[in-house]
Length: 100
Picture 1 (cartoon, helix red, strand yellow):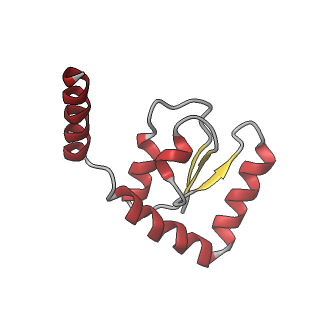
Picture 2: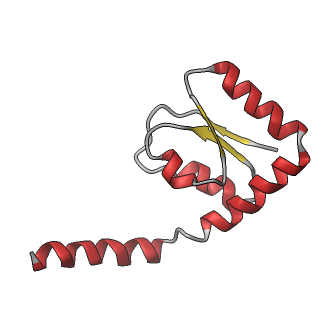
């Protein structure tokens, strides 16, 4: 019904994207790389506040419109990420660095 990921630190944040790809609404931390990764497709919470986590879970589980909105936004968001796009971008960065 909901994927809760109250991580204190993430290098990138694949678990929330995997949940979004499966159509699961996401609640995740407002720290590290996670806000940039999920964009507006997840509820962001302070991972050190259990009351904030519980409130976000309550909202997603009791508000069908919010749940569906997050589900749809998540499915759109994951389309922005692919291994092919990532490797092209890394190659572009390497070429820019080598060109000086």
